[in-house]
Length: 237
Image 1 (tube, rainbow, N blue to C red):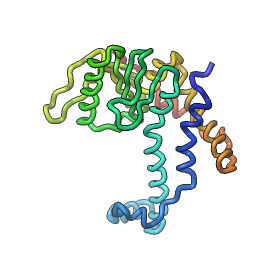
Image 2: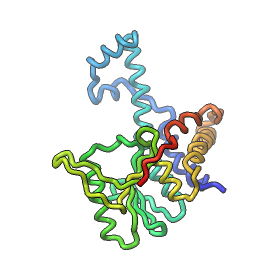
Image 3: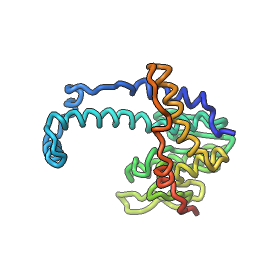
Image 4: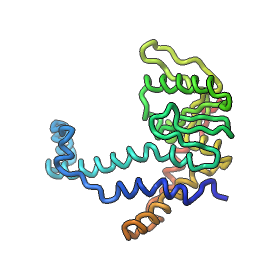
């Protein structure tokens, strides 16, 4: 049995793909934030390309960056489609909450998404919510893409750059990788892999429905890369 509701996830994906498909960056939009002409010249030399060719590559890079920004909230929204889990939206203290599981979580797409000082603020928010919400027993800081291909579920003790001190260890405030967290909330050890396979399948359907574009689903997966990212080494405590 699938860990996910196919239709719910499809509706999460649809606006992301519709907004991103066919997006083009104009010269004026590219220059809005001031081009780094020094970096452009050096990169052009290294790649042996003209400045105009560099501009075209930079436009593609900016489109990719726009999509990646949208994907930053994707896992929060997907987790919110699971029964018993509430997506608290953008701008809240934390990202998701489940009274049935007794958890709250802050979801980050990659281990290096958040700078050190902000992690301190996240820790403090998680601690405050644990103290205020009697239905919550565990708080998680989730890194969907883990560091060094490791799995971990251990106390979250971020360092304060100003004081050089770490926040105190609290077994109820934990740092966890994406695969371990999806397993935790679904009870399915293959949940994240299932999602990885499902996303391109649904994306192909949406592009066909919205734009009459035909894609071959089989071209968009790399199981070996997934296995490399989610290695079997464990740092759990």
